[in-house]
Length: 331
Image (cartoon, rainbow, N blue to C red; front, side, top):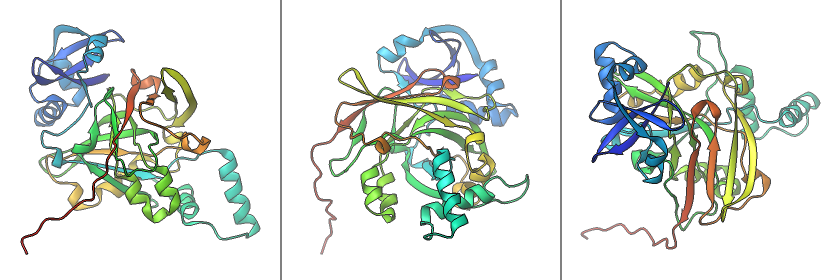
């Protein structure tokens, strides 16, 4: 089962995806957020609540896209109560990369970089036995709900950015209940979107490189996630294909289990504030930046995982000015 959010008659609505052409309207005021809160209050799953509330009204999916009415499939009424984060170095990557690392370890050659050490921690302890704590992953903060860009809408690039690169990833979507317990509502396909030139210049600038907009959706998958997922990431320029590459994800292709990544995020009490929404990116191993691609204004990203229905599409919109940030004071 997959859900979408969209604008309908001046309010945020939820739709049940029936097929590529049809959406079944779910009767709820307040979008997926309220639907999930209602499900928790009624002791039902989100899928059960959605089916119970789905009416007979059917809408044209493609018309919603053409009219720019698609929204991210989960948001909070107050963007300050939506936390957007991610974990990196979680995917196994190419066999060559892994083989090179193991060769260095076996030969006792030059010391591993901090990134390779982190990657090795995940390989060695990222999938612990149930009920035990595994290796701590790399973690980063992207922003609050104000950085979320809706599917099909332009991704803004600050003028001071040195790069604007896609990161095709799985996204976990969560709601904290009134008792402070995290609930995973489902998954979406996402574009984590980062400044890879800034990150490459100095890994201590990773935090800066992540403070960018991002997008996910348009569909929220409620079904159990397959262990192996195969998709494709594309960039179009002036309507023509510039770059494309397959990517794999899912636990079979990851050094960490989802349970371990979730534990190391939600173990912090400040991330269990009742009513909050969390959007968490799980990492990737495929980037156009690694193939020497330099994006520019107007390029369009397309990220597709068949299990998630419609692809996530966003064009780039590069801002032209970067005025100096000025702090005002009374003295």
